[in-house]
Image (tube, helix red, strand yellow):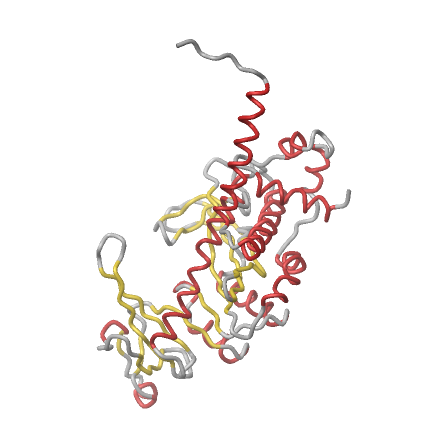
Length: 357
């Protein structure tokens, strides 16, 4: 059995599993048809990466791609609090929690078109350098490549792979002036990105030339309208909108969005940017349904190859969703119920004792 065939079996195992995914577990499931050692050799083979994922997902992208597709870039952390630290399992800042957590940090580029969302590339953050933190006096790890540099690499590779997309969508952490300039000038694409409320903007080209900037949150932006602004550090005009929404706790939230496409309306901007939220169920399904977070492997190589396999398992689930019109969690629930019924029937075949009244 070659590695391509074993990848197919291993990804099916990741989708079918409800607990930890191990070489021993897969070997037992197959009644020893594939040995534990063969599975370990597969996971310990040369590390797979985003280029290998593209080879897997390319034919499916070609099936669904349209010029109106969007490219979404985001990062996530698979927490590993009890696993020994190494260059990929280490401490990362979690923006959603406002604290550092121990785990694997990965950045994904996801193509979204109609109702299909597929990862086309990814990068594992590797902190291979050590430095002395002046504030704490402790030795810490860092990556030689910044996340913004990775962001730029992922976008450039998407263009080289001839993936048609009209807009780049991302969260505020990637909304730097340099990234905006890259998307518009080098890649010849448009973007919709959030802006921090303290970003400096000019209201006219003359104000920009004179250095007359004001904070975004000081602007009087009418509801459901857009405003042309000149963001500090960006050499072309943008449209700015202010989206007001209600949080789950009843409080009011404000999201400032900027776009390089000056033809869009307020509704266009908020609707298109809403597609970015497809990355959240991607992260959740990847970790739970595709078992990214369920491998006890400890080395950089085996963890890296398990993550690659989980990405491939997600692709299987997403294409199943497209054909069955059933979401990932419903598909997983269906597998669980089938397994539960099989276990129940097998138990009854063994004729367990019946409890006395």
